[in-house]
Image (cartoon, rainbow, N blue to C red; front, top):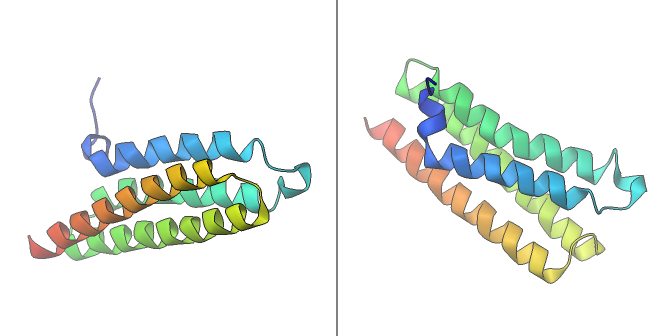
Length: 120
């Protein structure tokens, strides 16, 4: 089966793994958060991978980097929500550490991709 260029990016693959982890994590949230924090976190995580994918379809490196910036911004938004969830008791310290590590890895990968896009 043909793979698009974004599917070959390690950062995209890691971001898809993060989406799955977020979806599984928010299943344990209180019911009254179904349309609040859990919905926001799902949309945020999907935004990361979606913007990475969309950026690869752009023709100029400057435009590609713009979508990497948007993906990075969504990553930081998700990190904020993870911090809030830990403080509100929706996730325990172990879940918090795992999520935070994954977000850090992805944010570093996005920054490296953006530098590459701007320097080629």
